[in-house]
Image 1 (tube, rainbow, N blue to C red):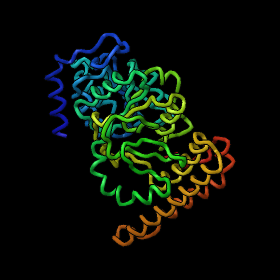
Image 2: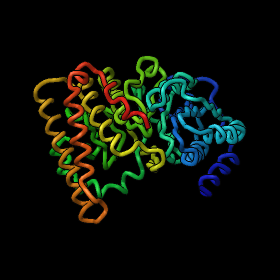
Image 3: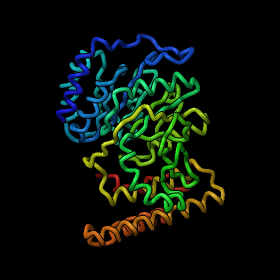
Image 4: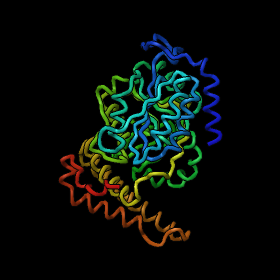
Length: 365
């Protein structure tokens, strides 16, 4: 926290050098980084401490945003008090800090839609409340928009993803075989199982079929045409994949990721969905989004079923590893996923009709 506060003070010392553009226009050529205004939208839920660290890295940007919009779903007033305390700091640096309560039911999708509607920028950058941006993050995101005028969405690269590389490599053959989430060199694709690949390593700017929810930016025109699916309630795994993949399908070749805009996703444990609830929600959302976004031909349905077997085997392996290490007293993971699949089977008709209201009280946390 001391380091982050020092970054905030450093940003203030350089505030006089941070001139914000008055107008926005499509660049005629590269080299006009900062020629458009950026709104940062951050949904948050009971994470004032994490949010303060994230805001410190936003304040420290070489190219500052026009504004930061905080959409608060918290059950207390800590975030509201934090933004009230920091508002003069941001104002002194020429950056607006807007606080708003989510006007709809608490959830990621409603918060993002509300924040986008309230923002003023030509580029809207959605961030999780537990990320730390490299100082040149916004500058490098804007550079991609300048280099590729057809770009409708751009994301940065998780710098900390590299630290997870060894653990991911251990399961890489298994995850590839079962069409589960895995990394692949310079590949940011969506598989027929509706599970994505993430580019590791990422060696250059590449086109994407999806953008990660922890950091994703879009032109204003995209948000005028698309909204996050508010059927996905509360913490909504897959809402980022759903939104960006719909953009990709409508405008192929318009989404990009750059290795030059790096960030750390701290993935705080604070205010996370209870594990059993999350497994049930994830299974239902995954099938709902698979039916919504992927062509329902036989080959894709078989791949989805095969991927589900992979999820079950993964849960079983995790339970066995936990037992071997003395970290688990039973087969909680496998029981949860089998229970979630049983629930989805019971509500197959609802899922076929695009209805997920049957999750009911699982959302009451």
